[in-house]
Length: 129
Image (cartoon, rainbow, N blue to C red):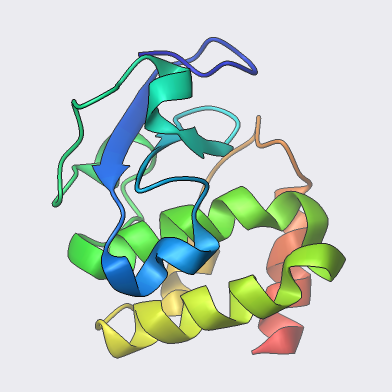
């Protein structure tokens, strides 16, 4: 129940079928500190994931439901915007269709210890959107 990269707590979640092409596994986990997304079993959560996770443990900006899961997966892709651009775009589109205000999410997300430069990625995403 910890991130294999930084040992912080993780939040596990079942990946909806519509998002599985953009996930590391059918069950994944997002780190509460570095925002990396890994297969749930790598974080010690094998079989212990929710279809409706409480992502507010990562940051209160996360919406609930599929929108939150899409944005969690998106965060896991932000370490390489150039390589993951197609997935990032699809995940953001899915989050918006699921009712998320992506601009508001990006503006409120606070992750000083993210595995990527959040301010640079935020600016790139806003330009991209």
